[in-house]
Amino acid sequence: MISKEQKGSINHSQIIEVYISQILDIFNDGIYISDNTGKTIWVNKAYKELTGLEPEEILGKYVKDLVREGKFDNVLNPDVVKASEPRSIVQVTKVGRKVVLNGYPIFDTDGKVALVITFIRDISLLSQLKEQIALQQELINKFHNLSTKDLPNSSIIVESNIVKSLLHLLHNIAATDATVLLLGETGVGKDIFAKKIHEESARSKKPFFKVDCTTIPENLIESELFGYEAGAFSGANTKGKPGFFEMADGGTLFLDEIGELPLAMQSKLLRALQDQEIMRIGSTKVKKVDVRFIAATNRNLEDNVKKGTFRSDLYYRLRVAVLNIPPLRERKDDIIPLAKYFLKKFNFKYKKNLNLSEEVESLFLNYTWPGNVREMENFIQSLAVTREKNTIDLSDLPNNMLLEENNNIVLLPTTLNIEDTPLNEIMDNIEREILKKAMDIHGNISEIADKFKVNRSTIFRKLKKYSLIK
Image (cartoon, rainbow, N blue to C red; front, side, top):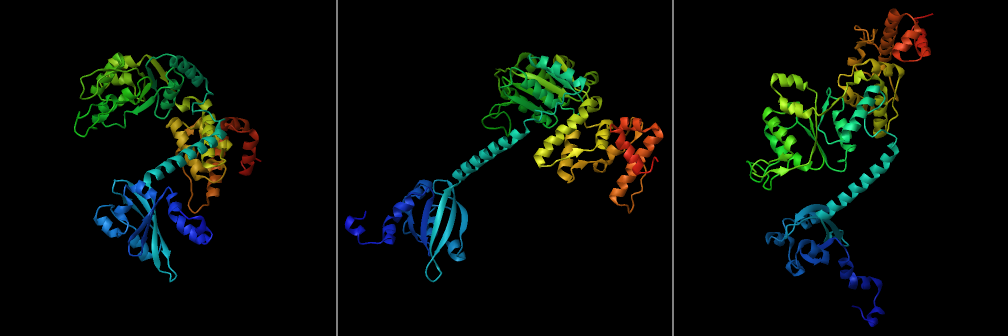
């Protein structure tokens, strides 16, 4: 400490020199000071706490000697002195802790490195900071998402009578604990309906697990569903592992594409459904579980039963409550609302302002959507990612859509000369051919407008443009 007499006789620089040790001890980072030969001159309190090294173990010793003694695995001082620039490395300390070293050169009056000051920070602290930043980003994203609160909660668009009836039935089924079987083509949204059943049930606060039977290798299905005990088989986790039935206890387990399950697993699944009991692989103990079960398939299970590839007893156990989800082509009233929902979703995500032209809306209604809702969602996302203009027109659509023929309207001529032709001219030729064939088939503007679901004035204007009427 400085006496009152000393305070009156020294300047501020001298005061800082006296207090420098206490000043550096305030830092949460460890501070390690060495000279240009690598000799350790000083460390602060935080350094001891981070590394477990006492000052007397290292002061006065050279950093390379400390490496040989096993105090730490590598050092920064020689690199900083050689480069005369800051350097960074990761170091493992005596106590096995990983720390980040950031070394900075201190120059003398001749411009040569005199000292190296190294700041030491625990990587675990950096991880905590990273987690905090991630949490803050999540909160920011949630705040931004408030601006999309007018979007539907899912892509179940309720416009067609068939979906309205389906959701009414779903609501009644969700109120029970009955096993549910969802039937429908690939891409109709069976997983969305399954999640909605869970959300409207008394189990909504409990876990919901989806298992895609097509993605799990056959030899792992049993362990994934029912779990295993420690040492049950070679490569097993030493602590064992719970299966999806255990993890979904109290909640809902959704098995997608259940028709892909091998026969042996179907038998075990049936017992679990009937008795609400499971047994881990390698165990002799039966565990009770309380699981609401939903299954889905795009297969005709009745045909599979006849072929012997699906157990009849499991099939009838699943057919307690059945929801048959129609393909998109059978619920045309949902097509444009769905398309607009996905446009709004991806417009927000990619900061776009896309909309559909009347011609595209008409084509969407006539297209059969073999991939159903999933195909539409992926297609509109691709438009949002790749298109720069705001209005999606026929030129933005792929040939598989344009070549499809429906409702007596040929949507695209099967032969088209595009060699050395500008794109805008090609599209004009396509549109002209479409309208010409429509006029040949229907003969009047009102009927064509009705077929294409556009205004009569739009058809009239385009027919005039291509000199198809006077």
